[in-house]
Amino acid sequence: MTDHGKICITIAGHPVGKARARTVRTKYGRTISYTPKKTRRWEDNARMQAQAQMRGRSPLTGPVALRVCAYLAVPSSWPAWKREAALHGHVRPTGKPDLDNLLKAANDAMNGVLWIDDAQVVQIVSDKAYSDTPRVEIQVDTLSAAPSQITRKGEVTQFTDRRMEEA
Image (cartoon, rainbow, N blue to C red; front, side, top):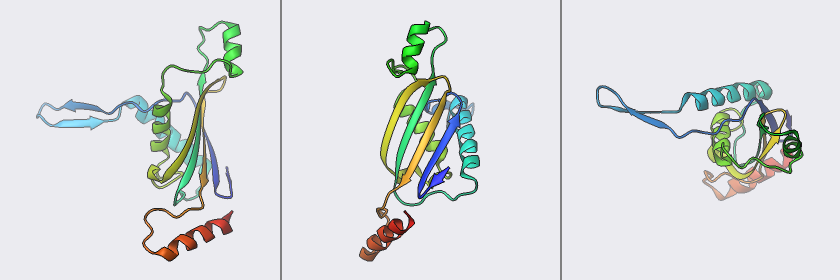
C-alpha cells in the first residue's frame, strides 16, 4: 500500500525480536557467527510478505522516517479483566521481546525491500501493544532532504525540489 512516498506494510504473525548472533567454534578451530533460526525465519517471512505487498515497487532511496508498531498476543493465561484491559491499551507489554530488538528485526528484514539499506532510516517512532491479531505494522515516509552522500552544493536543491514535486 503506497501513497506519495509513503509505504504501509503489515507483517502478519507473532513479532520476533532480533536475537544476538551466535558464535561457535568448528572442529577445525575456526569460528563461525550465525543468526539464530527463529530470527532468520521471522525475517525471511517478513521480507516475503513485504515484497508481496510492494507489488514490484522499487526500494526507496534517500532518507526515510520509520514508524513500527509491534502488536503482541495477549497471554492466554491472563484473566478476562486483564485481557480486556490489555486490548484497550490500559496494560502494556513490558516484557520480552524488547522493543529495540523488534525494531532491529524489522529493519533488517526490510533491507532491499522498503529501502536499500536501513542506514537510510533517520527518524524512528516505535510502539509495542497487545492485540488479538499479532503483527508488525511498518510505515515508511520519504523525507524531503538530501542524503549525506551528495558531492556538490547544487545537489541539495535538486534533491529537495524533486521530492517536493513527487509529494
